[in-house]
Image 1 (cartoon, rainbow, N blue to C red):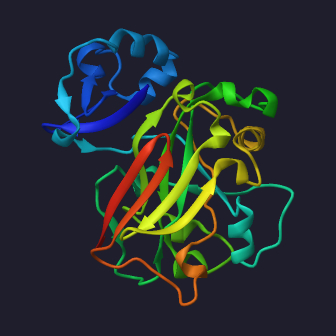
Image 2: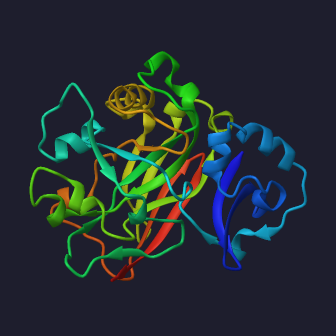
Length: 281
């Protein structure tokens, strides 16, 4: 199943994507006004099965895409989680994941502008795979961790590099408004199959800048869940962004940064393509 969060006619909603159309879930299940609500209730599979076969309400081109989870409690991001990116960054490997946080307000949905802030010209792309937590848990063992995943999505961890490197703490450069692309939808695990076989590609104006398979991550999906759930309670709707492969703009010679009018795409097979046009604001 593919689950989408969207806005239509001034109202936020969510639903099931069928082809190029949407079955509006909140229209039929008024107890749930967001995808996160369904995850909290533990009813994703049940609601999805009820929606299959229903007549679609909207076409994808009639809605504004929202971040897959519109108000997650936590967004935990893994840095330096592909060897190629760790090496191009000049960092040494560490036995534990590098984890930083994003704020929900910094995110935007598929097709929405990606904002290069006026304070910087060093705006970089980072194509990633995001996983969405479907069950609450603490101290989750890696062997059981994937049972806690509601689904996966594409992510562009847009990074304002000079602000990121003001100090050793990444937070400022990762939280400017309109820099965290999340979408276009969430695909559930039974549709994904083996998550390690997901393939990620980042394109800037049609040119491939990054490419990797998920099994090239240093710390796997399960290991990231185990680590993060050790220091915090994971709850339904939490997002773990799992790291970017090598090829980022800041590491290229000469560096390549995004500018106004650029189009950046993050494709994760089999999920889909997350696309943004860069604006200055």
